[in-house]
Image (cartoon, rainbow, N blue to C red):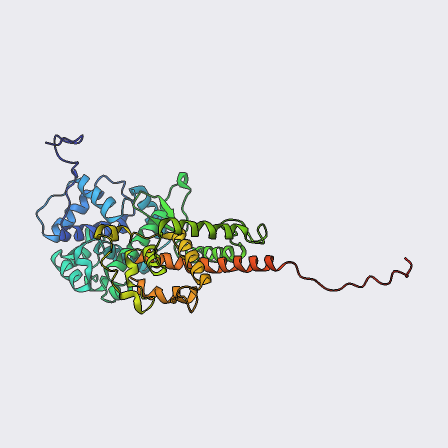
Length: 414
């Protein structure tokens, strides 16, 4: 049996009684009514009086312990915000308000936290489910309870508006509004040691620049629309002003090797490798061997479908000959062989040139990644090799005569 540090077995259990949706809704409404009425919880009977009044109005038989009701109000209703912060926030909200304005302000606060609670339960999915839950919890009786500061004209239909779900975007929208509500409570309820109260709203765009994550009065900074636009502009400016680093080229550059001796040495080395690897084979057999098993999909001319004859190798030997070459070096090897075969003029499938032959084979090996990559690398390497041959021909032709210069007659004096 697995043992735990908290108990003899199993994990840590919650030490507080959790109410049902119906009981929690009544407790949430009664608690925020008491808060908006007294705006101070220093009285030891503050929370027990809420439990007694809600129990009588709701009709439940459960007795709520003081610690249970405190835990529910602080963790479930106010999202972990401590009591001192709630007191500070609500006192600042109601400061200087009297008469009918005070009654309207209390109704607004009660309505906001009713939506906040509904955003955390299953019955808050739409207005119809919320009204069913309110009727089961006797919210009308709670709203009219004089001990909680209720009023006879308050009805649940006036607090739960059907359009709220459409305006906010369903239950997910209610959760977003509830998070903003708790952010305002935490921002206005901060102590001086925490930096004092702050305005969590950006003065320019009106969006939140802080968000409450459920850790007491801690607020995490977030990017508002202004900061997002500034960040996007900064990134765009950085992309336009910063030049990309120069790409490193493979081998010697054209300036260091104007006659392309290095490229010609590469060509000769690749040709020697082909001669050593495929001695006595025809050009078509070498191309198929270089491209591997997928080269059987190629059609270089009408003779590709001919049988190899009775003297062909065994199945295992043919399979070993179809391994092929891949990647950068495979493409170079294929290009060098095709260029040499084209220059020799003894193959018919290169009548249109090496580039045309390679482009013709690409669609036929589309489903064979290794052969496709080899041909793509060969096409990319072909212009470099052609440039090397052009430089070699220019060097063999010798330097040009150049323009004729007029140095004058020998009889002229300096």
